Amino acid sequence: MSVYEKTFTLKDEDHTMGNAIRYMLNKNPQVALAGYSVPHPMERSVNVRVQTTGEVTATAAMRDALLDIISVCDHVHDTFDLAIEEHGEKNATAMETDVAGKGGGSKKK
Image (tube, rainbow, N blue to C red; front, top):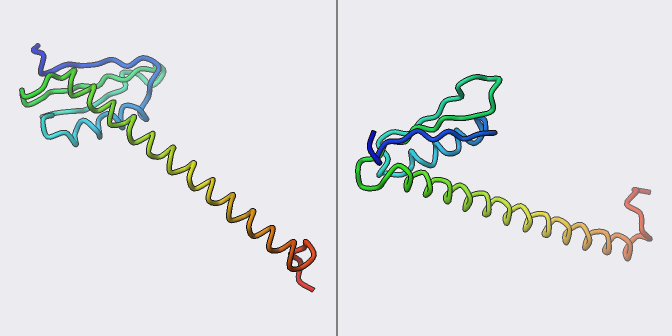
């Protein structure tokens, strides 16, 4: 086996991580083959197989895929925080308007 093909075993992981890594690896044009398997449903481990075109090592491709996953997770986290913040501001403004305009209640008379 060369440095351009490798199987990584990830302990305490399942299909969620395996599929995310497989997806990111397959987006890389320098990766010829990427797949994963769960050896046994009762064992929490995932085998990720990486084979590159020879331009980068399998380890480098795996590292890049993991860094890409981290970037996506950071983006989702930041977007979620911003949405929560905006939602809170909208609700606070709506409550202030409601309190000032109708005596604090939102019930129809």
